[in-house]
Length: 198
Image (cartoon, one colour):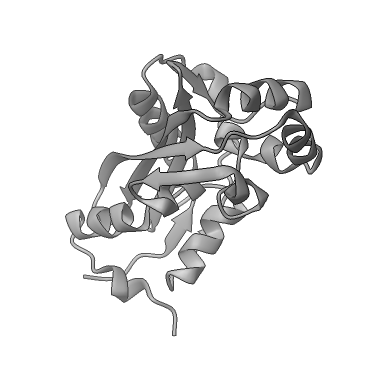
């Protein structure tokens, strides 16, 4: 089987870094998909649909290639949260998150243009947040990091200081479950090691 180019349908530097650390150097092609078009109230369905839509938009530009689309949300207290719109929203959200446990959902969609196949899966990771003070919340939000992240925190950044424990795949929280990606590639007949860059 010919090996297709690996294309990441995301501008997320964290996702790109995860792939590169795992030996895959993707071609990055941002989808610019309008997420407001999708209105689903169940977290796993929402992220899978958004991941697929992002991958489909990018796939239209390629006759071959393997296109990966991803989307993440945090569900806490029955509410679904993506990126906070502004600092005030991020502060209010962290006041809810502090001392609580949520589930980070990441949808993963792979479109194989050579085989004309699409597969979609969802990774779930339980996250318990530390009890933190209003001063710490304000300082963290002022850093700007929470405004760039689904769930208003980055595990691989300053936000890692405020995560007490995780249950499940840690890379899923960063925006891309590497073990799930390996299984999805296998489902399409590929071995992840074939994509390693020397």
